[in-house]
Structures are given as structure tokens and as C-alpha cells.
Length: 539
Image (cartoon, rainbow, N blue to C red; front, side):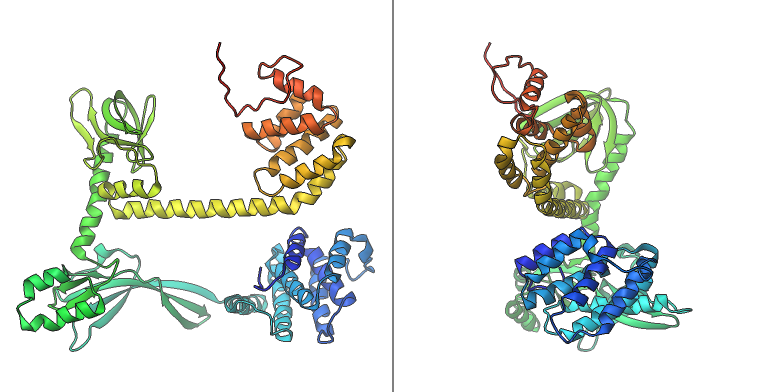
């Protein structure tokens, strides 16, 4: 949401308008402004601009008289809107206009957004007390310029471009002097060492190009420094130069400023090294592990289709196996005729691989400890760093963290969608369940519509009861709902079967049919089988 001070009532109402299409969002805004104005500060230009947008979306809008009463969903929202306080009404209108801005109007988008942005900025001016985020407003202003430019005849579209630069530093009289040059990529191996340079780093700079004019942006995305020289700790400086009065100031500066390391550069200067800074020699060493691992992977690939012997650990247990090599996935795993084994993974890792026929060693990782059984991502990454190096592990970690973030966002979206559908599902199910279970159904649907996982059971239960009403067989209904429509897991299907046995009018017949599929023939047996639960009985 755009505003930070919304109440729960406003947020709930905003969630409801999310389901409206673009035309109805505009209709609702016009209706609220025309019929429910709460401030004399509104003038006709607000409504006029919104009607201009609606005229673009609906060609018949100006030809007929609009009967708002036929839009039941909009009337409901309007009624809820009237229950809000004055400040809540103001906030809701801002959010509604912002939703219109975010909506994708396809081919008409530039024209509509140009009109709408003029309206929104005027709205913000009328109500300057709103706690809008400054960055949001800045983005709106930038977008306004962009769409006006795009909509104007013959106008050039402003374009943002990003360039990458290398900053080289040289020893100066008092301070280091910089030399800046544009580069096509951030590759330290392409930076030529002229023998005088202290070090270098990369950064990006954004520009806005408007026809023949170019406007400078801010520098950003700085890399860490890479120095040409040797790293020294404070203790090493003391040991080497402690008795030399020429280095007392250096030692004092390191102590007072908390510098743990300095680099004695090839230019003769001493520069402080912060976390992430490195020498060029350290950079080479950091990447050499990755190159050594790649050489081993390439060697392994040459022997695909041949018999190999490998020593690995499986949750702390040593495994010595012989199999046919089928594939090699760099930095990930090998695939054999009968299995897939990670080079370094959760609870499993390979110590060595040899060619069965000759005994030639194809792969060896001396960092795999006896009884390897690492489980946490951090412990696994620590083991990988020792053998693969930091570069590849940092990339894998970034991908893992990004995937986790996307997964969490997807869960949040699914949970929100479930809550928004709660009352629709409760109402829909009431028409299908046995009358005597109506109250229990409302409680069941309420409890299981709070997250994106459980709501599938509610949806499946409703879909199955509809199929039963249509006279579709149990078997065909399961195929359509469990497999084709929703793709339920075994646990979800078992929970749905249990719900159907209680709520569906054909529940008892379905319970017997369901249990029979899993070997339970006794009609007196209570409950339903959950196929995701394994039960072990003594014979």
C-alpha cells in the first residue's frame, strides 16, 4: 500500500478493491467523488479527469446514463466506505487512485496514465498531510514526465541508462589521486597494472537521456577495493617496523582508527583495508579454487559412460560404490546408473572418484571430513568454500537466498488470497453441505481459509460436492478435482476426503468408497484413510 498510516478497516476495503477490474475501479472513484464527497476542497476537475479515463476505457460511457445500482459489488464497497471516518475516507481514496495507476490498461496505458497522474498529483497537493513515502512520490513524478513525453506528438521518450566505471588510485603528494575510465564489464583481470597504481574499484552511474540532453545521476553499486601490494596486520607491522620511528604514525593510526589490516602498495604507500578489500594476489588465489574444480569436472566428463568407483559419506556413514558415470553437473553432483550424489550437499558428500579399470584418480576433495554429516546451509557453504572458493559459493548463496525470498513472498500472496476468499468459500459451501452441518461448515471454512495451503482443502471439498450434485461418479470427480483442477498432495486429498465424509450429502457413501481404495473394506470402520500417513501393524 502507498500510505503508512492506514487502519485495519481501510486495509480490508483496499483488499476488496483488488478484485475489481480497471473500469470498475474508475467507476467506483467517480461514484464516491460525486455522491459521497466529504470536503469542499474537491472541485470538478477531479471528476472530469476520471470521466475522461472512463471514456477511453468504455466507448459507450458517454452515450448512456449510468445506473450505478446495477453494480452490486461497487454498491457494497460504497456502503462500507460510508462507515469510515473522515481520515479513513481520505486514505482510502488515495489508495483507490493508486490502484488505478498500478492497473495494466494495455494499449491505452500511456494516455490513461498521463491523465491519471495529473489527477493524483493534484490530489496529493489538496491533502498534503498524508504520510506518503518520498520515494513513492518521486517515482510518480518521474513516471508523469515519462508518460507525458510518450503521449506528446513527436516527443522523445526519456531513457535511463547505466554505465560502469573503474576508479584507479595513484599516490599523490598528500592524498591518493583518482583516474576514472568507462568499462564494459567488472573484470579485474582486464585492468592493466602499470606498476604505479595503488589499487582500483568498480562503480555504476545512472544517466537520463532526453533527446540530445544527458543528465547525470548518482554513483552507486561500488565494489570493494583491490590493491596491488601485500596485506599486513597490526601485529605484522609492529614486528617488522616497530623499532623504526618512521612507522610510529602508521602504527598509531592503525590502533586509533581500528584498522586491522593495511596494504603496502607497489607505490610504496600504506592504505587501510576494510572488510571485503583484498590484494590482487588474494583475488587470483580466490579464483584459483574454482578453476581447479572446473578442471576436475571437465576431466570427469571425459569418462561419462565408463565404470567408476567412488568414496562418499551418507549422513555420517561411509559409502564405497562402483557404478557407471552418466552425467556431471558442475559444482552440484554426479549422476550414475542408479543414483545421484552431490559433490558437497546436505548430509552427503564425495571424497574421491577413481576410474575402475585403471585406478586413475578423477576427483579428490581433501576437505571432506571423516563422518561428513553437514545439514545447515551455512555449514555446507563453509565446506564448499574450502574446495570451490568464495566466488561460486557466493553465487549459489545469492541464488538460494533469492529463491527463499521469492518463496516467502509467494506464501504471503497465497495466504492473503486465501483470507480474501474466506467469506466467498464459506457462503458457497453453505448451499452444498448437509443442513445439519451448516454451523460446523462455517467454522471449518473459517479455520482453513487463513493460509494458502489449507484453503486448497476447502476449495477441493466445495468442488467435489458440486461434482456429486452433478451426478459425476466418485472416481471421475477425484480425477477432475484432485489431479486436474487443484493438483492435491496425498495429505490434502486425505483431509478433503475426511471433510467430505462429514459435510457432503453423499458423505457416508464416499467415505466407504475412499477407504476401499486403501484396503479398508469394513463398513463399520470409522474415519477416513489419509494416504500420506504410513501405518505399520504386526502380523
